[in-house]
Image (cartoon, rainbow, N blue to C red):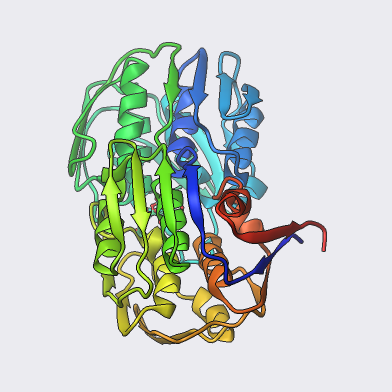
Length: 418
Ligand code: EPZ
């Protein structure tokens, strides 16, 4: 097991760069197998979920070269179309490879992705989109087999603007016969990045970033190089960590509009922000003000920022009300924060956070990726030493979070194999 040991109480200040986006890199890496050629990606974060995705691609026969944030995928001689169960279980978002497999091979085999720490994570919307596109789906003892003779463009009406289902439908439709329209599509920036990547490869997609995306099927794609957008959730996490300590941050290599709802709430809490084209300067107040948060699909407040933002509100003046509208079980982390002195009252999808004067460093266990980041933030402001166990959760989605925060004056030690 790996853990962080954090000495709290340091005011953070300085300048850092955000890394590339996990949630843009994963669908784009999956999409590389649609091209029977070589694809070069830049600004890919060094995180565990990317390692899992690269393992899955290797399993199909892809040749992978990685050097720092650059990844080269050679998908010329691939023939396998099954996602191993252990990798499906390790990362449920592997399901987005299915659309790319269907686009390339017209078949795919995978095990039902289990639920995870934040909810049941069903894939019914993905399967319905595949069926709309003429794909036959058979389920047998936990495995799902998808196949078809050809993929026929059609209209797909999503019951919910699911990010993954939107991405899977896009990947399946790229090489289809005819046009596909996805209605009630997710509008996240990662969807726009996927569209830009695919169009650079020769796809014909319009509408990403709106709730209606149209894809004109093309016969093939070509070799390209592409730079992944910055990670808006890592950026929001770093801003909240500095704001919680009353510090200042010059955050570079970001796209401010991608985290507009988070910046708006930081200002409501009393932070001063100077927003430039690719950087955000934050000056925190002595004492943050309580604010209310409702998570919503983009462009609403992102569910992935809910835990981190609520952790920051633990020391704010006043009471904050948080409503988690996206996932049904995204408050597990609050039990750990209560051990540090946090004052949370959970009723279903609502969390009431009462500001306290201080938090105390204790031994806590990370419960999931963003909940773990919420504990790191709490450790930065707690009195004394906070030990966070099971930080493997955090390493799934944050590229050297400890190193970035230590560069700003934090005292975080990473202890492996304890
Ligand atoms: C993506 O997950 C992100 N992951 C999540 O980030 C993010 O929280 C989520 O979108 C919402 O923004 C990646 O991009 C790899 P959804 P995804 O499908 O695609 C329900 C992180 O911390 N639903 O938009 O799985 C689902 O249960 C991760 O980086 C169905 O009911 O999210 C949930 O309640 C966590 N049926 C809601 O929709 C389906 O078929 C949103 O899920 C699919 C989803």
